[in-house]
Amino acid sequence: MDSATSELPTHRTPLRDTAETGLKIVVVGGFGVGKTTLVRSVSEIRPLNTEEVMTQAGVGVDETDGLPAKTTTTVAFDFGRISLNDRMVLYLFGAPGQERFWFLWDRLFSGTLGAVVLVDTRRMDDSWYAIDRLEHHGTPFVVAVNRFDDNSVRYSLEEIRQALALPAHVPMVDCDARVRASGKDVLITLVNHLHDLATAKEATL
Amino acid sequence: MTPRKPVDTGDPDRLYLVTGGRSRADESFDLVTLIVSESAPTPGMQSEHARILELCEHPVAVVEIAAELGLPVTVVRILLGDLLDTGRVTARHPRAAASVASLPDSALLQEVLHGLRNL
Ligand SMILES: Nc1nc2c(ncn2[C@@H]2O[C@H](COP(=O)(O)OP(=O)(O)OP(=O)(O)O)[C@@H](O)[C@H]2O)c(=O)[nH]1
Ligand SMILES: [Mg+2]
Image (cartoon, rainbow over all chains, first blue to last red; front, side):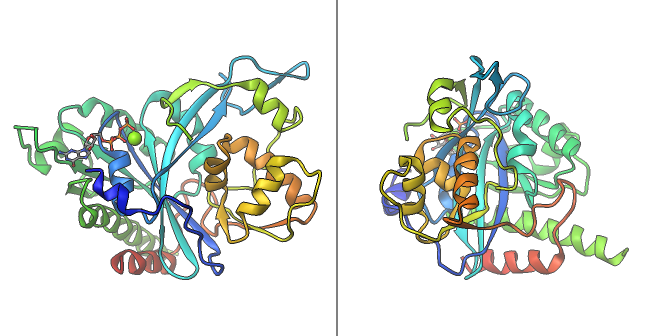
């Protein structure tokens, strides 16, 4: 598992000087579902970790009478990166699907191309919430089922679709988040879906 | 940076020091806006400003700067605003960061697909 990590350089790998367009895709899912593993398997850098702060109202570093608010909350997330060509760089974010995180969704992920909901069939409840929020935000997404070896029950994608009450137009895909080719396939499934949506929309203009 | 729990309580005092008490971040800096230094650090410059200038010799995304400095994204946006105002950095903003629900055009997505397939 960690062999994939050690192959990556530990020092910073700079972007090309011609890089000009940053793009975002977000991987959401419950605790331990494999978000960081998926990011790592496709990223050209070792996943980095960062944080954003918010007050209870969700507004950033707050001030009270010129003093910083005493109750700031920090939400951490990790990310990796893929240089697509000389100009375009795709950033892949791993975000916990928990309730508090969604206060920060707009500030962090407005303009995101789309999202991957990573599902562990043993903990479907975590996915429900993420799907509901993405629909609410109007963010297009696909559902990727991370198949864990130690899971004895193997539900079909169709069974999972029904359990999640997922509309037919939302693509689903099996994956093994540890495998680069599989992670790549998940991303291609998402961008294909986005491309279809964009093409359909352009046809009506 | 040491990994943290997804949600924990930050240290407001430290952030207050770094930003000189300011709280309004320049919202035009997206997480994936690419920053490039236009000058070298000068003596006496605030250390965070100097670090950013060193880091951004080649383009670096805002979120990577935050990770490297171990500072929240909001704080980095404030620091970048200072550097942009004084012409010490330039910013390459993302094309696709309009409203949440609006899709980028199919030509851009085709380029993304092409890049992913070539991985
Ligand atoms: N068998 C198997 N194990 C996996 C797979 N994906 C992830 N794991 C393991 O599951 C554990 C959790 O994976 P992470 O990638 O850390 O999950 P995460 O969603 O980032 O977890 P949090 O950030 O803590 O919420 C790790 O020990 C991974 O090695 C998979 O596809 N198959
Ligand atoms: Mg993780």
